[in-house]
Image (cartoon, rainbow, N blue to C red; front, side):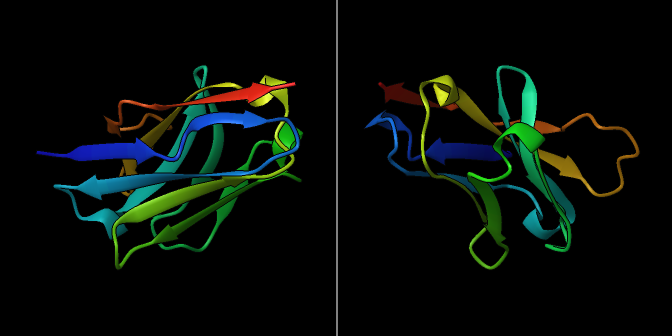
Length: 116
């Protein structure tokens, strides 16, 4: 059974930082591209091979995605938090063989609230 469990969300003041984490189990983690979504939008993704990342243009200077294949973890570092970063962040996994942009598995989400 595949599980993606996010953590690291919470209430933070604007200007602060957060590190969201996603622990994956039940899948061959290194075979999956991992993504972080908010409000249905992909905000960041990292390839299964760890070579190649995507970060949405509007947050490129503040969001950093990374993964640790040895620990089956993916992280999203967010700096200089803004109120508009508030929302539920979902971790998702897409198998490397998939030719579409759809993701195969999803976590339950972790909520980020940024106070001004």
